[in-house]
Image 1 (cartoon, one colour):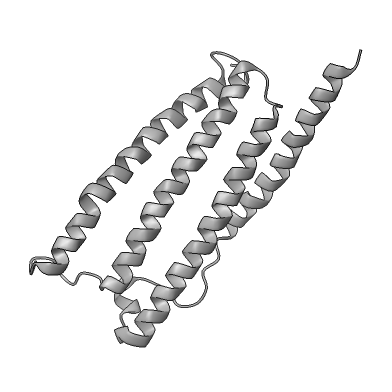
Image 2: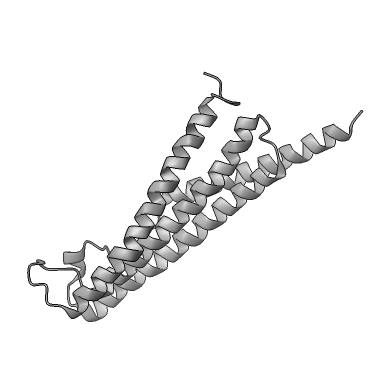
Length: 177
């Protein structure tokens, strides 16, 4: 199987990204139209059948992080689909691909920084007002750093520059006689 072009591995991955996009959209719709209203209703109705629900100080930041995670994943999938479309066409070194990779790494960086602040803030709030609730919620104290994500961001920064330089060289070659 060839890597680039029609009926290639790139086209298979692009189709897989299409499926992932629809799954993410469905999850986001379920969360927005069912998850948030259910939590709001739960806050005002006694649902004694729920055994030891997590405190609101954990649930709201968790919902926020989950919804933003879905949005970030959707941005990444959409940008990757555009990159794979150029791979299928057999012309990967276009300036737009460098932009797509740059948007992906910036989005992942902003997401990880936001996640670190929100989860650390939730743990701090629980420690101050929750009275030992972190043990029941599963949140750890301290700052949680996702090394794999930061490595991926570093690789994406390099790849964005490689694609930018490749597009520049390709344009330069087109002008050469």
